[in-house]
Amino acid sequence: MARGGNPKLTPGEFVIMLAGVLGLIFSFLPWYSVEGGTDVTAWAPGLFPFAALAPLAGIVMALQVALDRVARVSMPRRVSDFTWEQVHMVLGIFALLMVLGYAIVDKVLVNFGLGYYLVFITSAGLVVGAVLLRQERRLSSRPGPLS
Image: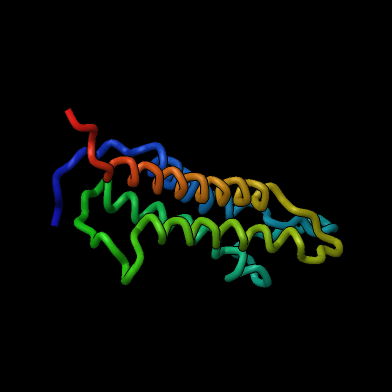
């Protein structure tokens, strides 16, 4: 069921959609470069499924925004006891923590590839987008000044 409303994305929604899509694309770039010339993506055996969780969380966030705002699909205001803003915040922080976890893993004979750094940036973008979204929705729910 479709609903009316302004399809223009807020800055938070735009950041979430951009970071989610780019994070998925960048996850196919080399996550690790193994000495000897082998590149490993987030989807390669040994890293999958854990390295892929960050871009998957981002694409879930982007899809929710796209369905809600662009496709205008009528979505429930809450998921169980959580608002969508809370779900976005948890998924964004989860994605960033997953990527940061790889920074502390002992990397013998491997170096981070471009894909890792770009997914790290997009995961941070997901958190920024979630924070912006929360602030935007709080401001839009406040009553206006009395005239």
